[in-house]
Image 1 (tube, rainbow, N blue to C red):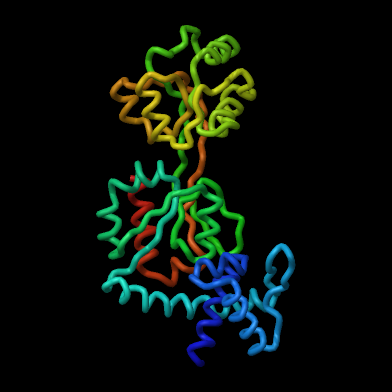
Image 2 (tube, helix red, strand yellow):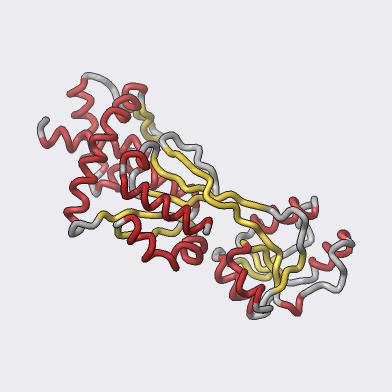
Length: 299
């Protein structure tokens, strides 16, 4: 196989994984015209159409999907051989996830994770959907995701269940006891709320799960898309919010925050460790890292 044909196959596979000619070109550092010419040359070489083109982008044909399955393993294996040499003999693994979880749960154990798996780690923070798209496109190797992936070519294992708790600075604890549900919920409406998003995504889930109603009477005094910043705000006395328990364990133990409510069944959110299908079996170091992450998270 000529070198240019190998390059054409690599461009094809990246476009297939990205689901977009422009995104595939961006990931490879090529112009869209160059990426398109690579794919067209491969189509001419094979005598078949690989992508149906439209104003909305490209759609892989069944032949493209089959070809992707055939070439993904060999091309990825070749990249694995070349990448460590370019990095001074150490393989770099890109791990994506929410900043709060990676920063609070995994960051303290990065040395252990890197040593056990014999890799260099590079962390990227972001929202689950965008990170999963980058994983599928090959820009990431592992993702800790708050949603189970629906994209083709991705495999997920349950990692841990996050428990959400309603917390506040001690001075905001309502006088009404929680077992008087209607009056208690009404009293909570008087407590300043710090929310993660304008639509109260985490708070809404807690209210529906625990109180069986929407948080219609709640209006945030601040919206902060960073759970650690919300925690800092609450510790300073701002008001209340719903946060993952692992994020506030020490603050609760030290009395800097208090639980406003302790339901029998706390809302849970499953986090998943996601990889491209088959890669944990094929890449020993990636599998070692995944196993080390599971060990750290589950204690």
